Length: 418
Ligand SMILES: Cc1cc2nc3c(=O)[nH]c(=O)nc-3n(C[C@H](O)[C@H](O)[C@H](O)COP(=O)(O)OP(=O)(O)OC[C@H]3O[C@@H](n4cnc5c(N)ncnc54)[C@H](O)[C@@H]3O)c2cc1C
Image 1 (spheres, rainbow, N blue to C red):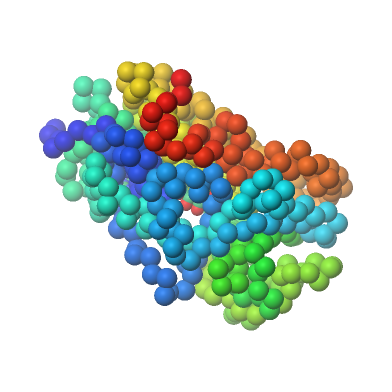
Image 2: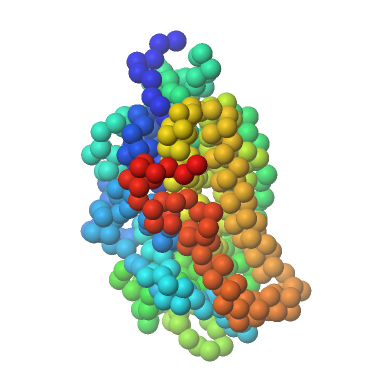
């Protein structure tokens, strides 16, 4: 097998997570190749808001800043939000969060996935030390002198010291490494759309645990909202087939509370799509000179808006561990180095994933309503519980990667952690 060049790191998948890892590792001085099957679409702000948007936490914002992409993102359309409101279905319990109460400038920012991926690509193209291999695909994985050699659809082979699987929920890298997962099918789909309310979204991330599943309204720059509405599969298919007026009427009813407060009247909706909702947790995040990050390693229910945020924390954690290994003259692919990354990130993700799974379970059957109201009431009244939740959701808890907590990459390179 012939390879033209050997890289320190080869990343398979240049979605938001893989591209962030590539930027951080290249800026840390590693030679990086990144392989992507599909050329990303150019972001065009004259077009309507895309269907896939995400809530990016302050920690994710700090990571994207260090990756070099945030400046470009914030020059385009995005919507910071400083308030969040979580309601039980009958509004008997409401948990309200506001950024200043936790010393934060914002709780998060709503951004189109396409803008984030495009900005990261622009950053990658502008920086040296990264080879972008696109369009091409992973076909086979072999080892030569114990080093991963990836064979591509084009016939090319690429050798690396460390392979990173960032190739999404159906990760081929994960399957080739033989890493198993626990998999939960929720039997639900998340319907997404952009909707216009009679009263514009006041800049609040609003979520109601409606009957059948959570319903979220995320604020967009022009006062419209991006919704994620979890519904049982058959019900989701039915809702997708309704005409716009009928869909808006059903959405309005699901969102209506007794207090008649916002969101109120839904005037219009854009195109709709639905995504299957699952939880997938890999048994380990590292094997044979390879690691998994992002959805390749874990998929969580979108109710807490944490999927891509966890993936960006993986990317930052990986950069931190590899920089520390190099500064201690350790191999970036040594078992000790990879075990450190895998244990750290897996335990952090499990806390969040199981928390989300538990919250979702608690909200489903009506028989659990008294327990739910009691638990929610405690959280609503406890500043300590709210602060612990916000710190973790913001990516600012004690165990979060340094880059998420605001440490600059240049400082990490000067004084790596032990
Ligand atoms: C309805 C919904 C709402 C959500 N809302 C939020 C939210 O508000 N906040 C949040 O944090 N998360 C949210 N998420 C989750 C978030 O969208 C995902 O966690 C995130 O997109 C995963 O990014 P990734 O880069 O890991 O994977 P992907 O985006 O899947 O990227 C994988 C990349 O790998 C490439 N690839 C795959 N196989 C190969 C191969 N063999 N060779 C080469 N390239 C390959 C693909 O083309 C792709 O570009 C939501 C999810 C859903 C379904």
